[in-house]
Length: 358
Image (cartoon, rainbow, N blue to C red; front, side, top):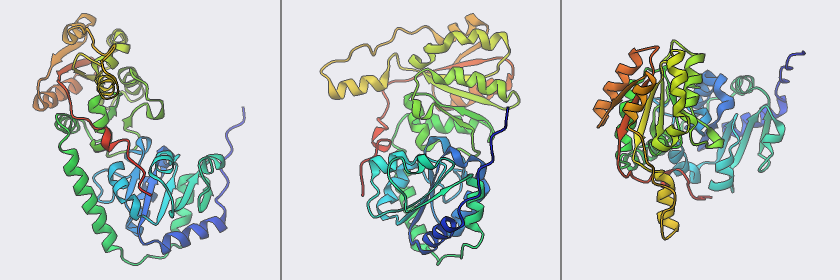
């Protein structure tokens, strides 16, 4: 079977046109996706040279470390979006900004392996077809240092601080997310799920390496988390794997605890138990006169884990959660289920589905 052909080098004329756009930009933004995972060094160099904030949809988390001062979350990027003049989009569908945020008056440079994808929603100012690493290296080669963008850097910092202050009010999710980040090693995998804590994690869980934030992305599959985490652990047996689920989502694949115990797959699974499909219940309360099919009759998740031969524990606050995750990760070949009883949580959706701003 023939191998996949290497992508052709980027068109030199398109590279030159993109360089000119970036050099002339006053308020640039870099938007990366999963297609930029192999270009982490190039993204960082370009961001620092252009003094441009870097944001990402979920598949690109960690392409630029979230502790870098130019790394910003999607709600921060949305706050900056009306003021941006040039966007460099690398390895991303750029779907939400194009369809929901608006692009009027914005110069967009698209970098993608698939020429059809580049033009799927609307034609960009410049299209660069090719491998992200090679295209960004070509852009960097000969890109003149731009004028200092101190005002833009200050605006980025202000937006970041303002949004962080708003997100701090999302209780109790924020403290739970921080506890999990503190317990997970830098190279550990965080496997997300369609759950209230997961939605906040997408906004503010610091991702420090590419491909370590695992989630169902565009599919949005409830029940994805625990089963996917088993696959991640089998692929990377020497690295920590932490999965999070709501009670309803975990029950989709809870029987795979048998697989985890039988094969010594030492995943730590955190289950947030509020006895309901909370996100659906919130939507029904908003749009309907009653709730339907949202209440759950749950097992005791600690006893359920023990019945399969796994370790089952309960954590009642972020401090206990952090401690139990650390103990679970130390067990290596024994799966651990941590049940976290929770009540109604703050609504994160105003920071996820963001309105048109241009």
